[in-house]
Length: 210
Image (cartoon, rainbow, N blue to C red; front, side, top):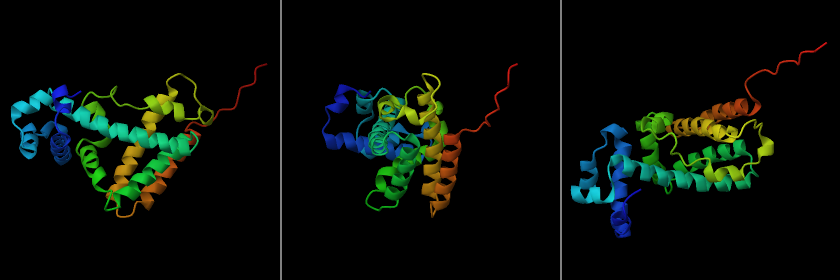
């Protein structure tokens, strides 16, 4: 977490630094991102940066946490609207992002996060930074899922389902944004959701015991 000093800054000064950081992380892979470029763009001394954040990783985690919380809030609404159907909610998420990315007034909010994902091999982003346990999902979301719609067989099944759907949906969202027309990507994504929903192994006939 950033220091108290950071949160005590005027809102416009905080946002100027965060905006510079988003742009830099979206410009190059995490390992190549330059603190110097960030502080130059934000017009702050290097010493001040280290009064706000311990290092580049802490700043990155904070930014990703912001994106994560927005995603959680949106997924809560979609799951509530879909009455706990996790597959329908993820499809709605795909459609929502595709539509907003193509809306000139809303596109900017996605550009930085998509740049970050592209620069860091998409689904490998969290393992790249040793962040597998950091992702704030499912957390608050599990209470919005209707377990009767899923074949849950162990305590952590729902968490694993979320992780799989996040990976699959994240890749589909990125491909859809890069495509001129996301319709083909959506069709492929629908097929993948259907496979995951119905299961991949053929049910074996029960053997008869004499």
